[in-house]
Image (cartoon, rainbow, N blue to C red):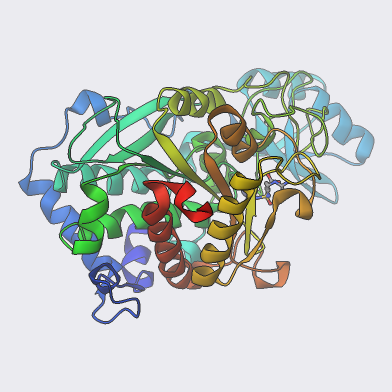
Length: 439
Ligand code: 0X9
Ligand code: ZN
């Protein structure tokens, strides 16, 4: 379904001229052209070692015996009983509920006298975005782009997994550094871009992924080359692959935020952006497993956050970090978990200066994270606490619910990507020494 629609829908433009020092993009290549170039290179160049890139059943669905079922249920008491029998209720209608259940739970459900009216194995799902949003990249398509980039630009890139999710999917990192390959350490200053911590924030994957495409397409321009020659750049477009797959698995969005850990009591998911060891599970986090802001049983209880933690700790060269989220059009910097401003005034000056510059490129509003709300255990507080990294959260488009909330449609991708390429390039421009902004 997606492939045909993708060709029709994806006609937005990304400028290659920005890298030439021309801040007002001139000549433009279509994204389709960019992708078809990648595809052409893919067939003419050797792929990285299959062991490093091939994910068998990379949606992890073959091993998953869940089905999407519709069960007759008259009232809230029956619905509660179904939850207790293991049905993960996602939709409630008058007289019936829909949701996910494993084979064992389905046996229990029918044994207790409930009627299953409809059943589709999770493996038979469309595994894709709704048709109107086909321009967004699902996991498989994201991997295709990453593999294509690695194959087309073997001199500049490395592609590796930083670890696995709860359901066994890899979390992929693209490294852009012509001098140091694979997971070898680097003495160069490092910039780290990450996205899709929260499952339903799909636009974040587009921004991170297409920044990688753009950088490599423009690798021979003076502006990009100077960063390729001096920096160590990592991009992780999908930090929460299970959540992302789940959110789009039926071709109908699930509004899913967390990962897909099975919690005590049978609910699913830990909020990965509450699971870092930074004032863990204090303000702005929930101890209730069913809550969207559930902090997990302990700091770094989740394989996804552990993978990010280990990745960052193994790379003391990382100086800047940008974690893309949606939505509200904000630029947020620590503290997220305390209402107090940063104690270190030099660091605060760097954060504030960077935030203001980011705002100039995007039009987003810069502020301390906790001015939005105090929330403990997020990526940026942890990265700053653990390694003094100048770590930012961007809340991308739209500004408000009325602009589409978490699902703003394919029409926003082009502008969001363009604006954020400029902001990301600015981050690269200060990564050599962020403290130059405080001198
Ligand atoms: O709550 C979050 O994790 C982030 N917002 S989102 O809507 N994408 O879920 C914000 C994290 C930044 N921290 C604070 N604002 N305190
Ligand atoms: Zn988020």
